[in-house]
Amino acid sequence: MADTLIHDQDAGIERLLEIMRRLRDPENGCPWDLEQTFDTIAPYTIEEAYEVADAIERKDWPELEGELGDLLLQTVYHTAMGEEDGNFSFQSVVRAISNKMVARHPHVFGNEPRDKSAEQQTRDWEAIKAAERAGKKQGGALDGVAVGLPSLLRAYKLQNRAARVGFDWPSTDQVIDKIQEEAAELVEARDELTHEKMTEEFGDLMFVMANLARHLKIEPEEALRAANAKFTRRFEGVEAKLAEMGKTPAQSDLAEMDALWDAVKVDERKSGTTK
Picture 1 (spheres, rainbow, N blue to C red):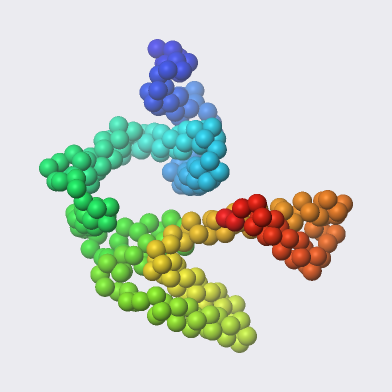
Picture 2: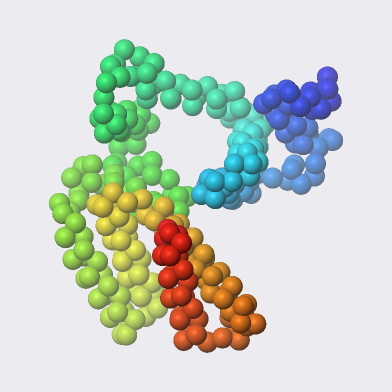
């Protein structure tokens, strides 16, 4: 029966669950899979989530299909280990998220009216989440912001949480003033203080930059991801122009590459590629 299920391409999630059970079988499973733990699999889970985001960014839908499968495998992997330890199972995880989505959407699955603005729905969502945290005895305003998030995203979320209880600058001007202050302190640290202190001041500056993004309603991770993509595209344009000249970046110099960078920017404006 198990082999029939494993080779049934139309069996859906049950097929994948059985594949994982076989991989983790103590007697006949895969030695590598049997060695894995939550700690060793967690980095792969994060990596797969980023690869999903990358495929979406590139609008590569066939690639996205595969990456979503890889990400789903991570959930199956963790739930298999949870079931082995008697902590939870795939079905209990599905039940928990289903219950959560129903509870957090009373305007869809309950008696609340649906004629709310997106802003009001967001406020209601946050109120429900706050009640959930209270039920978990997470009393602090910052409780529940995952430590494992990318640091820039975590800074953004921490500041959002603090702002909800009134700990926030009232205007963008004050945030910009703080950026100037932190930048000056970083310069002082660079010139006069230790590398450890310089690292601290750089972190402070990054933290305030995340706060400015929040005040401007900009997602900092999204903005930096776009900046990375723009840099990559333009530098590849510089490499292409050098290749036309029979050269590589190592055979060029900063002045030449800077001029080619400007030329790439001009080409982008002409072609309408400005992102």
